Length: 373
Figure 1 (cartoon, rainbow, N blue to C red):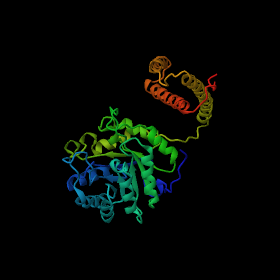
Figure 2 (figure 1 turned 180 degrees about the vertical axis):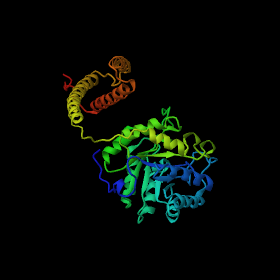
Figure 3 (figure 1 turned 90 degrees about the horizontal axis):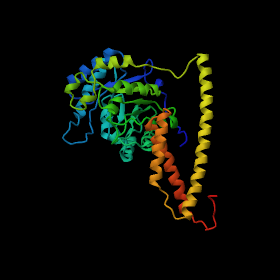
Figure 4 (figure 1 turned 45 degrees about the vertical axis):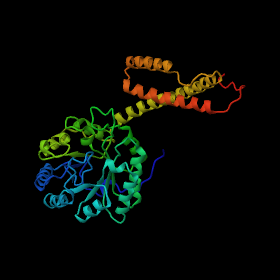
């Protein structure tokens, strides 16, 4: 997929934060006026939080779970803004939510993962946003589908919203341990490639599902050049009505942010730049060789495909493939390559090989076709 041009206003032109990262924090859910105000005042006191977040309407998996306090929580959010000066944001999922949030002076909106997954819901929200100049943050869908995420962003942008942030909050996966939602970093990285002007922040709270892994995920997000972090913070997490395991106190948030290393993507160090240029030249040569070798491999795969077809042999030879995987993993381990990387690489190569041979089997060829020779 080629680069996609969105009509986006750069982040620094519409939100005031001194330096990367942008920090958005607040409780998972607005539970009471006292809880909201105490949390917000403590967050404002840290001096590192730019936007206060709180869930007013909570899309819960089970109907007997705490589903938020509803519109009465907007009065508390309004009071937070008045008493702390922090910008405020809430999650919206319906046109009614948008209308109530805007009427009550909420500064930013976010669309949750369960909403992003449904293009009908996103389009309804987009229609309701027409004519308003309010920033909208869009979380990735619950399932690992870049096109759905991108589609939601485009729908909101086409509605005339030019202040947009994408939020990476991880993806549902049966193999997500130790995470609540698997980060699958390659998806937000690809979004960065496709939409280089789009700000992207990370929600490590929903990725980790616990406080113990927050720092490592935050650091990874910043090392991947994400613009900020949305971290859930509660004045007393152990008594939170939702997602208590992943929330931290404002004091813990301040400590966490202070421990992060903020790296840059630019330098004036000529020695470093010259060495980096030299190493990149080497890796570019290796990449060319890799592509040439893969092309050669696929040529052989095609010859094998024709040979199998003419001799009525099945495409898939599972015993042969298992041996390739076993031997490759053993060799890779000796050479210092990770098992996870090799498994992914071998799977991609095998899928492409199967596809090429399937295309050959589907072709109508004459008995005299000796393409394998």
